[in-house]
Amino acid sequence: MEFRFVNSDGRKEMPFEPIEPGKVGIYCCGPTVYNYAHIGNLRPYTIQDVLVRALKYGGFEVNHVVNITDVGHLTSDGDDGEDKMIKAAREKGMSVWDIAIFFTKAFYNDIDRLNIQRPSRFSKATEHIEDMISMVKTLEDKGFTYQAGGNVYFDTSQFKDYGKMANLDMDALKHGARVAVDNNKKNPGDFVLWFTESKFGKQAMTWDSPWGVGYPGWHIECSAMSTKYLGPHFDIHCGGVDHIPVHHTNEIAQSEAANGCKWVNYWLHNEFIIMKSGKMSKSKGNFLTLQSLIDEGYEPLDYRYFLLGAHYRSQLIFSWESMGAAKSARKSLIRKIQNLGVTNSSDVGLSDEGKIWLEQFENHISQDLNTPRCLADIYGILKYPSLDNREKVYLIFKMDEILGLDLERSIEALEVEDSLPMDDEITKLIQERYEARNNKNFAQADEIRDKLLKQGIRLVDSPEGTRWEKI
Image 1: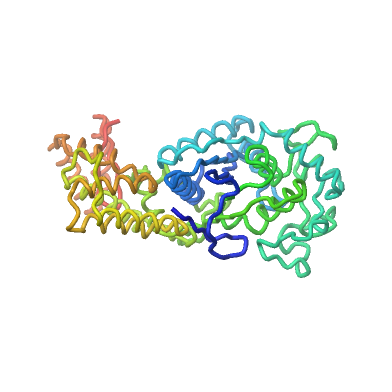
Image 2: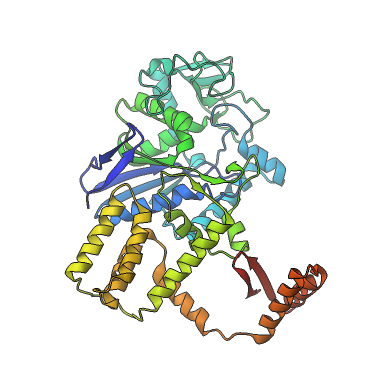
């Protein structure tokens, strides 16, 4: 397979050429663990999972590193605002350390439910403070820093290519145009590498350093940890498009200044999930978690299917209608495969037509991860008359090694569901509740719901209707 990616550094599609033949190093910006990940946060990890699966399928050995920001960072991508970890700890009545542990576990649970494979390494910021201090020392020794107001700043004027990937116009950049005014800065793009003077009171997480007791700036953690585990020059860096103008721009500057070489060859950025109210935002409260979808009757893999239906570089509009369509489409796909009646598709010798279908799929996934076309390939195989059913199932399961929809297990789950006896009494009560709600007799509807709840039956309403489950 010959991979091509649209590289954000240059804004053009490029053939992928690894630094070391047969091996790929990937660094991905992970979560700041101060709250549950919302469904928009989960989009990059899903597409990164497809990327890693595709590269492994293509024969590469992949070293995939994802950071866990458990030090916290400010509520702005710049150096302003309140610390997210402290804010969450205050609101939830927990220590910042307990907040980090709790929401790290919640994040792991979310990616597991989405069938996202764990990376080679999760790298926690709090376990790499000495690595960050060492990189700041290197930058200081090379003349890229200055101290002001008790903090250590990166001097962007000393790095000639600052802002290149983001196409920043440094002459036009004014104080306050990108980050809040900081009178300690020599240049508006300068950023903090190490804080000893907090802007919002006593900091809960602090460490000794050559510059005094303090804590790292947000950007330095990614540079220090990626360098430690992937080296000073590696293949691919992933993240959301919102990271380009500040976080990734600052990462490039401090990494290349410290290491003295090009840092990353390929940058892959995913677009946002958009709601009717705009981009999802935890600070604004307009966001949904994976559990929110589950509570509405969706399975996590319904959401994965929804994400794969759009190209990762396209904005994706979320609505309950579109989620309902994704759920129906996924279940229909599973049912179509089940109806082929194949119980064992291993050791299938591919026909010439089968080889053509597989090659077409591989071309689509290798051309900048075109997952919508890959899904279309699966439906095309199902309709193609010249393939026998065993070959169809073999091809679809082979493709699912990359798409990660867990189709084989989903078929088994559907067969179990089909074998369950229908409870006539429960079905009758659900219908009575539906009629009561339709007639706006909400008291009767609630009474039926509570009656079933006492019997250990929970009703789950969704756009597709009401289902029941035992509790």
